[in-house]
Length: 122
View 1: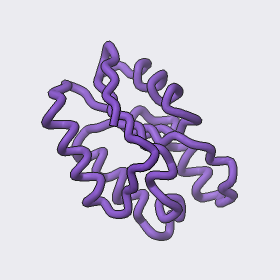
View 2: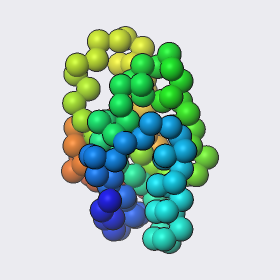
View 3: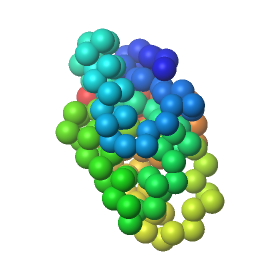
View 4: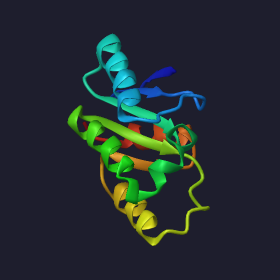
């Protein structure tokens, strides 16, 4: 994991090899970053490969569980990757709605995630 200090927040960039199969996996990472870094505002970039296909099948509710944890702990999230392979209208709508907000973003890569975070007014 790499920590990047932006002017307005700290951002943890998870390595692509990290696998988040359950919300418990994510909570361990979130707790570690939150307590060790001491930022007022924190963001996290997770590569789509880390989340697995279960996340992108909205019927599993895994995406909702993950996003709820970020909301509960007030941590912004960018999910980095190529999402063009997904044809589900529901998923495309979900991604579009997230990108309109200020808390969860779907971006092409970690650099795009850092750019979105740097533009946030916190």
